[in-house]
Image (cartoon, rainbow over all chains, first blue to last red; front, side, top):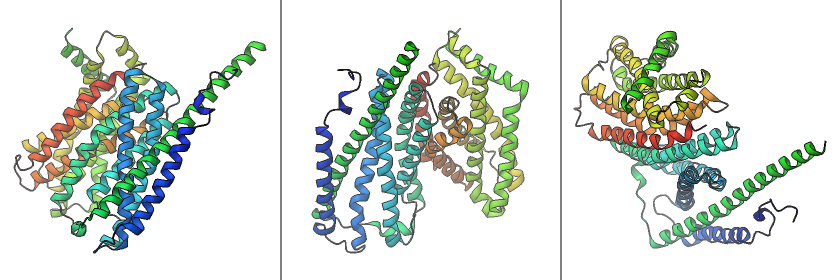
Length: 242
Length: 223
């Protein structure tokens, strides 16, 4: 075949991708149904509490995505393979969407329950810090031209950033407990088995959705790599013939 | 040449380069004095208000002046081509990291030495105390170490000086929270063991950051 240097995944029918997309679509509908119909109405907060299922699920995926970038960074620094870099950058971009959703749903939840959009609640605060780290990572990539350097620097940043997150979490949580906030006083929530099941379902749905988006983002990056290679090849050919 | 003398040689190089121009340290000093002035206008720092805000103002000033010094010291390295010489020299990458970090820490320490008396003069908050100095040292080491690593990254980007604070500040969240809390505890009259939790966070941060930076610094300065 003349296009042998184009990776297969960009040309072939992407069965796994389609399967992932279908599964995440079904799971999201199930999770939505469970959150609105199956899970009981929370006593003190009422229907507002139903945002909790999507808030927690997106937070989990946001942090998980960053963990994947951390691992991909280590693998890239050891092996130097472009595919690890693609995994790292895709995971950050997808994770950024989820962590943004976490912060937004957290604010929407906080307004009716605590009367304010922002209360410096530890988990919401660490999500915001995480969001800023994700943005910094993306800005760093955008600010470097050499692809090799881009991969190396963002691998290092992904690793260093990830190791500071647990310490940030301890510092923030402790900072909030030392200065207790009256607003977060009514936080306790009675959890019933149905709520736990709904939460598990939406975490599963969001994790599969993360996998789906991650796969598409990685395919996009590989396709863009292939395009760059083809362009270079054409330029070389036209130089030779002229 | 032993490892320590290599590190010291790099520190001496940075200090003597600075002695010629004095551009980094003077910029940092003037900038931090201006920051104090601005904070005083913004928060009306007098009496009880000054005491409550002093730790936060102190650390904000150190953090901002720190980014100034960190990016300048790395940019000078890059512009003069000195980093290439260092990389060609038979010196371990870890020695370069320690040398650059120590040099940056000296600059930051000089600024802090000037800042503390200013707090006593401007705001009547006595900060020149051994316990505060210990917290100051612990916080500065962590901030300076991660800052040196990130400055080496930022200097190779298009945005350069603008990039460093964006990269550094979200990673410095634990240092800033713990250092401010420990300092304000001490200002309010707590003993060092009463703020022990915060100093422990600082110690752990310092150790983790120095370890990770040592492992990754070689990849940053590779080319």
